Image 1 (tube, rainbow, N blue to C red):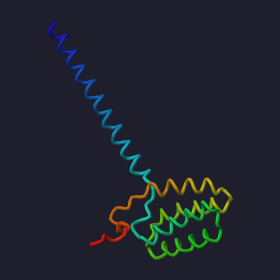
Image 2 (cartoon, rainbow, N blue to C red):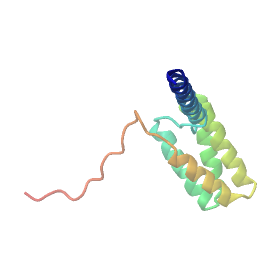
Image 3 (cartoon, rainbow, N blue to C red):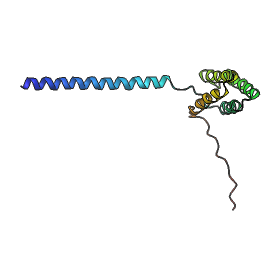
Image 4 (cartoon, rainbow, N blue to C red):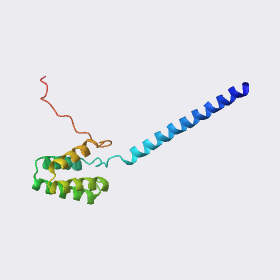
Length: 135
């Protein structure tokens, strides 16, 4: 009888180890997927940030002239090393989508892209000054 109890205990321990290893494997896989699916970042340049903001306005207003201006500035930032290549490629594909007539879809993609940006390490926007206090 003691042998049967010992065998059951060993079997349970083995199952517990396999379950634990499976959970660890799933967690590692999820972390790897999250790492490789993270959105492209535009960096910390205030100029680039302002241009992407202007691009959003141009796309929402379906303004071809402003779209072209933003595209030219973004190309310049990319060439100057202020805009990472992967982010520039994403923005370029959004501009192409808008030029193809899918303005609303381009605006949605650009909005999602902008929301995913992390402004870590950049200079924060200065607080807006309100009227000076009277002495």
